[in-house]
Image 1 (tube, rainbow, N blue to C red):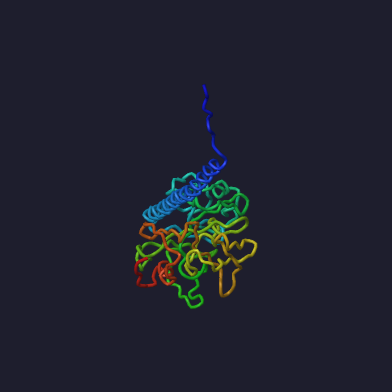
Image 2: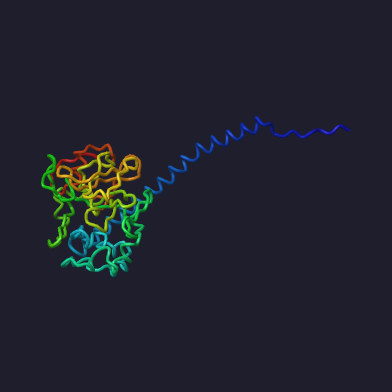
Length: 306
């Protein structure tokens, strides 16, 4: 009796199967990556919602938003909202966080007494799409900054033809009594004034996103979202110019003083929290005039759809 031989795969058939599998994987991976980024973007938006809620809860208790910063190094808005983002234990540790009295070494963000706070990575203040950074020792950077208006960190009355239109948060130099801004100071209305926006953490010694420190606790809208124009910082030691990573940076000058723009890892724009607590995705192609108008507190601009 003649037995029938079992036929296996030919080399060509095997190669065809491998090619088909490779094509399926190439189609699947981008979809998986997009789904993961969508989830990260949603988490980032939720972080911004929580910050907005914390700001309003703070406002209800203290009759104003938290002080943005006091001098270079003696506390920022992050410390102020800690009890309202389930971090009351850290708030209780931090020295001189709300009183903002005479600056002392024991109240600095880098003092040993405050390191248990400033070396803690706050998940609710970290965008999962960005890479965490610790530029000084183990002190953390984060991904959200408060709105200092439409000029620069120093809130110049006029900068290269742009007139300052007020802001929800103010620059408090050392030795100046800190003052809370309140909703009543937002004359342009809470639905058209940005409270908080995304920023990117710098790489290595770069201090962008280092929000325990005054300069990096804020952003301004002089630069458009995700701008190719460099951020400005006063020292090249803290400026790691990485334009290919959406982190262009240069040293400050008279015409381009210290300023950090709003930046994100989300394709096409940045996410913000408005003063009414709502969150919006702002296209990086939005008119620069509209973008700047959204940051002013008393600019009296007429803002259309955004």
